[in-house]
Image (cartoon, rainbow, N blue to C red; front, side):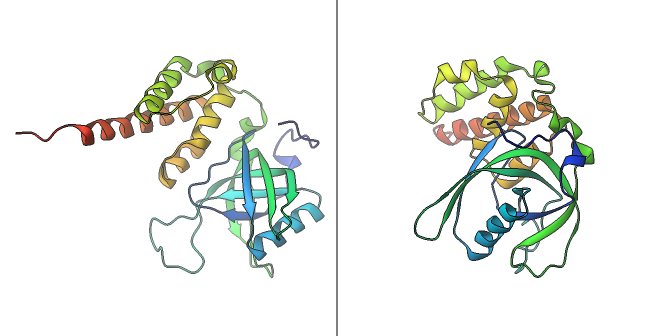
Amino acid sequence: MPMNAQYRGPIDLPETIPVFPLAGALLLPRGQMPLNIFEPRYLAMIDDALRDGHRLIGMIQPDLRHDTSAAVPKLYRIGCAGRITQLAESGDGRYLIELTGVSRFEIIEELKVLTAYRQCRVSYANFTDDFIARKGEEQVDRQSVLRTLRDFLKANKLSADWDGIENAPNEALVNALAMMSPYGPAEKQAMLEARDLKTRAEILIAVTEIELAKKNTEGEPPLQ
């Protein structure tokens, strides 16, 4: 989705951003994520993001691998900054927004703040390729991605818009499939942290093949 703001590199992004911890949520550069915002602290976060002019929110997963009972869960170190590119008021106190991914970031430190939502000082230095659209997509094994997608759809009795899929560039295809994939937080985090688009596609294929193998094994008759 086109944005009014242009981001050429890390210098164009603020070092401090609000973060929205959401398990299982994966935002990637130039991907779109719809969100239904209803908690007061996150409504305030949206208001502040619009007011400061940056319109940026850091999507990140809570790291629940250790202490799941903590009132303030630990965060993964890597997330993705997204710009608010659409916003609508629901009429019942909610915001319906869409974020467009800009760049991944690494948390340097979480700040002590007075706001009800969390804020972090972050660095984008390790993700300069995120600012280059379609970077590395020629290295993606497109046929393997499509074959795996067909197998997944067939196994789950789902359909898809194949005209749209066939016409999608590799970056849009891989990132959209990764974001929409029904996998858990660990798998989503692995795809987020992939060093390049080729690696992300390979992780997506591998995870899908593992899930399909499990599904096939579960459907086999018991051995006599």
